Each structure stands twice: as C-alpha cells, then as structure tokens.
Image (cartoon, rainbow, N blue to C red):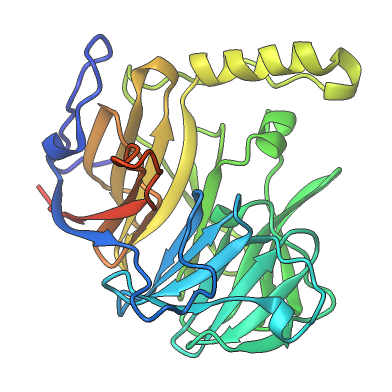
Length: 342
C-alpha cells in the first residue's frame, strides 16, 4: 500500500493534543443551537446529543437520547421543527435513537425498539415505515445512498448482515458479512461504522483491524488498514455475560477498552475519502483519512477530542459548556472543522 503525506502527531507518552492543534482540521464555524421562533413549546433544552446527521445544505438532525427528543435545525443552529411521531400516532412513546436525511426529500427516524418513522424534509410526520423494518445495531451502522435507499447492519446469533432497504425500510436483499474472531465484543461494544456509495460498501467493525471494501453485492474487493505502534490489537474476546456474571463482564469490558484500539466511527468525509476514528484507552483518540482505494492521506493519533459526524469535507464536534453564572447547564454547541489535505 502506498502512503501519501502521512503525518503522526502526538506521542504515546504525551498528553493528548487540543483540537486547536489538529494539523489537518481547521476550525471554520461554531454553531449555537437556538430556538428564536419558539418552535419548541417548552423551550429548547438538550440534555445530550446522541446522534448527529448533516445534510449537504448544512441542515442538521440532532437526537437527544436522554431527553427523548429529535430536532431539525438550519445550518446556523436555528430550530426548524421537532420530529415527533406522536403527532401522527397520539399516545405513542417517543424514544428516538437516531435520525438520517434520506436525500433532500425526507427524514428517517429510528425510535427505540423495532419502530421507524418517516418525516418530510421540513419535519412533518409522514407515518411509520415498512412493517419488516427493525432498528439497526447502532446509529453508525445505518447509511443512505444517493437514490435514497437505506442500508443497515443487523446481528443474529449465527451471522451478521447488511440489509439493503428501500426508503420506507422494506428489505430488498441481505449481504452476509464474514464472521468476527471476537463475536461477543463485536456485538456488545456498539462501535464501528458503515458507509455506502454508488458502487461500494465500507464496513468497519469495532475490534477489527481492517475496513472491508465490498461491492454492493457483498464481494470483498479490498481490506483497508495502516497501523503503527500507536495501535493495540484486541487480544481476546469478551466473556459471555450469563456465564461469568455482571461484575466479571464489566471488568473484562473495562480492561478491553483500556488495553485495545477500538474503531469508534467510520465517516464518508468526501465522495472520494473516508475518515475512521479510533478510541485507544489512555492514549486518547485518533483518526485516519483514506482514499476509497485505501491510500492513507493523513492521520493524527493521541488527540483529546472525538467527532460526532463527518461529511462534505467537514467534521462536527459536540461541546458541552460548563455551568453558567446561574448554575444552569447550557445546551451543547457544535464546532465545525474543515479537512485540509497535506
């Protein structure tokens, strides 16, 4: 594999660098989330951002898991709409998990449990999705292609599959992924990601050392990876919770997080590049940017910040401010940085 312009910043023995020191990411904007038109009847209050999706025009979908709310914001952070399934299903318990833009025409909302709901691009409820839809493993394992079809990762006792679905969540076909050497950790950690474009799918498991590049039919055409001594491979799988009990399981999970490099997220940074984000215990966070052909363009390892979303050449970081003078916790804000190629 050819490596172009690779640059490693930070050392394993040093304190993680602050975001202002990131060599390949230049801060371009800070977005304050607000509700100047009083769209929210009770006032805008966000406990914590669980997931973030950004449309090409800059509109944002924000899901607050703790507060059980989903929001549509304009590019400057102005609240445009609440995504509330109970409007078209009175009495429904709203527990949103993540929301995705489906092209420029609609929005797909995952609610806790098997449910999904569709909204217009302005946030009006269109109703529930196809009856055979069930929620994906976690928000990073759902993507939408240019035609508006959904793709999601699902795990079963004997296999893990990527489902190709239409915009309403009806399954069109399934692609079976290779089995993992660490099936329990792969299933329980809730990390990794899935990216789908017009010709390929890219899958990153939480404990795997390589990103799989596949055709849309599931044939593996390449394995993308470039790892240095900063990375630490997983040495053993998590134990079965029922066999060892909660205390032993939690200790094993904590040890794995401390001693291993886990793939946190996979983003389509541009239509030609991928950004993969890592969590490496006491060594901090890290990211690498690859071309879709597997060429490493840039990396920075041992940083203190992680990103919630990447796309259109930008990455988005959620920041929780400290208590204000009145002792209240303000809403999170969003820092936007542009990728600067070496």
